[in-house]
Image 1 (cartoon, one colour):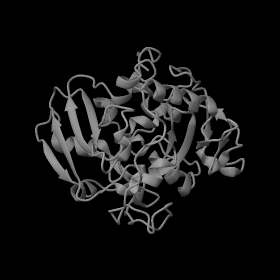
Image 2: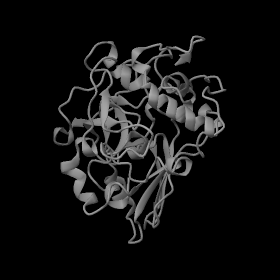
Image 3: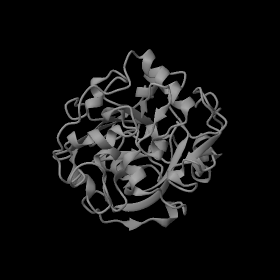
Image 4: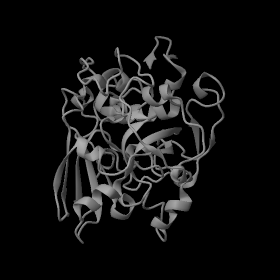
Length: 336
């Protein structure tokens, strides 16, 4: 999004529009952090053919490697998936820039092979997995999940992956394992957004152990029947559908089981806004904007959903029947 001299804004595509009040609050945070909005590093040359759109530029379905899977309808929503183009061009992936369009433009620099993931900490069998080992660790499933961003927009995405619990069981957690933290790649040459001190890099997120072991928590390798595009977190990311999207770390290189609750990247940056749990909750809005409603990207209303009515936010993003018991007795206003 670019600012015109008359203080208006130009939007290359309708789906790049974030409500102005949210945009303004995020900009205030970035200004307070002493960084500019524009990434100062040009996009680098694409290196990895498998996870890079053919011909560069905007991706299209059928251009990346197919990833075999079977549909898990029991864990899928029946809502219509968001168009592929919106899923792959409207992203928050600050490692490649702060604009929604930056990841699709800049992520061609990311090399996704070779790729290893270290799993360590409170486990009996620490191990370093190659990406091919991880792809074969458990049957790949397609699950259509609702995705909710803390900025107030939502998508429906057909992810490919398997429950994180398969990986955790393979390394045999010890009795001291209370939390799982996951850490993404640190390489400013491949991730030009890391040249800006927006957050302390590498990006770190975490879950409580029972959240991590829940069947809905998806270790994710693809979407729309293909491997993940770089801008969506290739080659492996986390997806937790009842939490805000920033809990899903992308391009993960390390998973550590620990005894104490991790201090996540956003908690460290803006603790008054971002809690450890970050469950989708219409009644709790620690940020400067309401979480009571959301806009579904790419569906209805024309122009990519730009004029679609906002709809009420669902507690736990609509997954309350599956996950509410995890938080029984907790004050969700205090533990947001």
